[in-house]
Image (cartoon, rainbow, N blue to C red; front, side, top):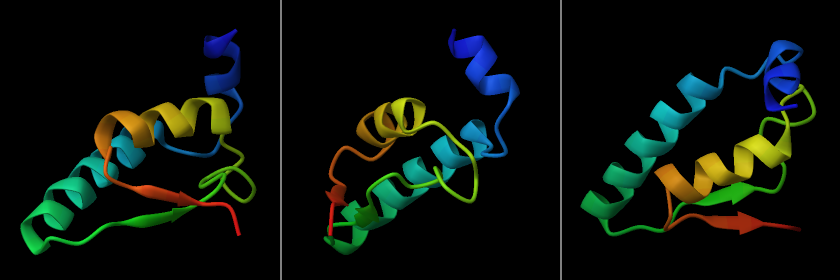
Length: 68
């Protein structure tokens, strides 16, 4: 199922994971907390939140996901 989801998206999950990792390291360096919008990469990027959220949790665990 995941393979099918990955074939029909515009979101580059590898690039997103790299950016999240860089954001995590920079936020630790600056002692800041990153805030990310709920369903990041979902609408315009046509990504799957079920894929994006675990990437955030893995690569930027200190991020706060904003609902409102």
